[in-house]
Image (cartoon, helix red, strand yellow):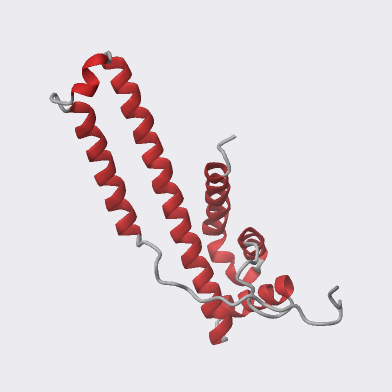
Length: 159
C-alpha cells in the first residue's frame, strides 16, 4: 500500500530518437499511394482479371483511405513525440522564458513536481490554452486539441 505523504516516483523519460521525421512520413505515404495505384492499374496482374473495374476502384479507394489514416497516425505520433520532448527539455533545462515557467508550473501541478512521461498530454494542452503567458498561441493550442481528438478517433476504432 502506498503512503500518501510519500512523493510519487516518476517514470524515467529517455527519448529513443526512433521517431520518423515529417518528411519521412510524407515520403512513405506518397510511395504507398503510388504502389497501390500501380498495383491496381497493372494490366498483367491476372488476379484482377476476375473482378469488375468498379471492385478494383473500390479496393483502391479503400486502401488509399487507409494509407491516409496510417499517415495521419504517424504524423500525430511525431507531433506528440516532439511535444513531449519539448516539455521534458523545458522541465530539465529550467528555462527562464514565460512558456518554460508555465510548463514547469503545470507539470508540478499535474505530477507532483517531477516529469512523468505518462502525464496526460490532453490535460497539458488544455492547461496551456488557459495560461495567459501563452496567449499568442491559443489558436495553435486549440488546433492541437482538435488534432488529438481526431487522432484518438483514428486510434480507438473510428466509432
